[in-house]
Length: 165
Image 1 (tube, rainbow, N blue to C red):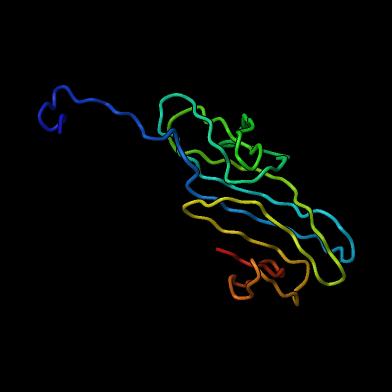
Image 2 (cartoon, rainbow, N blue to C red):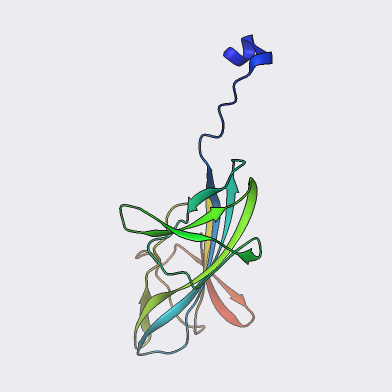
C-alpha cells in the first residue's frame, strides 16, 4: 500500500530468496557388468536462478555425494558444502544475477546380482526434472520406487532408455 500511495518513495524489499534450482536433469549410465558390485555414472544439468546482484550460494538438490566434475556456464564452478539435517550437501556459488546452467557428474554405487541390480539416487524435489537411465540391455525390466509403470521406455542410438519424470 505504501508504494501505491507514495510511488516516488517506493521501498525496494529485495528478493525473498537468493535463488533456487528451477530444473534438474539426470542421466545415469549403467555398465554392462552383471554379477558384481560397481558404479553407475551420473551426469546432471541444473538450471539455477540468482535473484540478487551479489553472489549467492545455492544448495544442489542432492544428498551427500562427491562431485567429480562441476562447470557453471561452461567454466569451472566454485563448490562448497552446505549444512543440512541429512549431512553436508554440495552447493554452488553463483556469482552474478540471472539464469545459470550447472553441469555436474558423480558416481553412485550399483549392486548387481545376476540379471538383477539396484541403485539409489539421493535427490530432492525441484520444479521440473527428468531422470534418464541408459540400460545395459534391451530386455531388462525396470522398477522405480517399487512401481513398474512410473517410467517410459524409449530407444536412443540402439540403446534402451528409461525416462522417469
